[in-house]
Image (cartoon, rainbow over all chains, first blue to last red; front, side, top):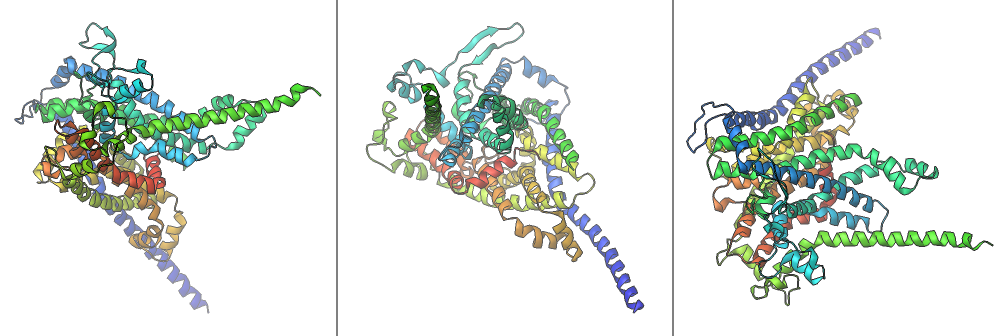
Length: 334
Length: 292
């Protein structure tokens, strides 16, 4: 009898021991399965970034490779260029408008869709569908809408005219003016808003505001109805509920949306390429387009690498704290 | 009886009714604005050459014609047709999506169920790859792809899409598998199942929705992608659809109706996916933005 019990105990122990060994082996297998992806990212993301950073400090400014270290000359040259200064101005203006309009409009759409309407899912699908379409398609469609027409109005101008809204007509993507056209000593560009960039913002908002709406909707669905109901019972109006309960609870969503939208805005390339090609007169050109031209038309690889590094650093200032914060928040949850 | 008491509820009923109507008016107006560009694409693409004139661009076609689609697809008269590019895009999208799914699923499994010291940090480092502007890796990408003989090939484009898809696919699968209870995995281990058997017998059968979300996400983003396609395929015959459309739209020889038909051809596959599997598309969208 007792021998049988002992045997059972031994075999359990044995099994536990071999099980632990098996788990240790499995741990190794798990790591090995992850390894190819880790290596790929190490090379294609971190290695490549380091390479770009190095090239941006080199003398590789013609089609002949020359990796002589020359320090920050390429950067200094860029910032002294009128064209790059225009790029930066355009990028700031584009990002600011795109971000603010997308967030506000997206929130507005989410509140509309969330107000218990009939056909809610149809409206939601319509507001979101541009997200499924390529920026190139968006660019082709909106370029046509925003072509002002030389002799006779076309596109939106034509539509406005036939609706009796002729005062809305504008030069759109053909507008070369900058408003309010301020001159600043030390800068080679006029500030502030190149008007041709507004149509591009409209197209980008058309494409991306549905995404903001979806994020806000997910946030709104996460707010317990009881909290709002309690506030209403206490005599809050709908506007007060929105201001004091809904909006504060949506703050984390806004943060995520800002991160995603800003990084999309900084690397916007295809939309501008199709809608305006950077014109008229570089009024809508962004660093991403200039980088492409430097590398593939002017063969100034070092200059292109410098532009790319500036873009990357700008994105990193935003993304790195966000990723670190997210990681912290997660380990606290556990 | 005080008449104001009786009229008050009906007043508020009326104003609420009015607010409701206003709400629908605003929503329908916005829906029209959202559809407007697509409406214009469709009516223009359905016109034949004789009907395309700028001052009648908002008019419905007098008769429906598929001429512009035929031209956009097969080419002719100075226009390069999109058929070849469409096939290129399919050749790139299908394997890139399949491999992305498999990689993402395996990575997600390891990072959610086989955590080790430092795995969370590695995951964060992986995620950073999702946010970089691809301009910052273009210069070495071209040189490395040339040195391994993949520059200017569809294989090179496939490889690029797979590598830069790793962060997002891993993220989606990791979050998806995080909802599978760890006890299930442990129970499998007690039964003597190893790493692969747990994956195969416990995780995979639960993974179908995850695979759909990731597949749709990768399909849509690779199909719509432009920058890599533009840079890696220098041979016009190897262009993906987005690059072909961009070239068509920049061409002086191509009529508006043909350009619009081309845009619709490019948009159609992803729009179909959106219409039929929109729910999963939305999940991918949110997974990519909410916390990792």
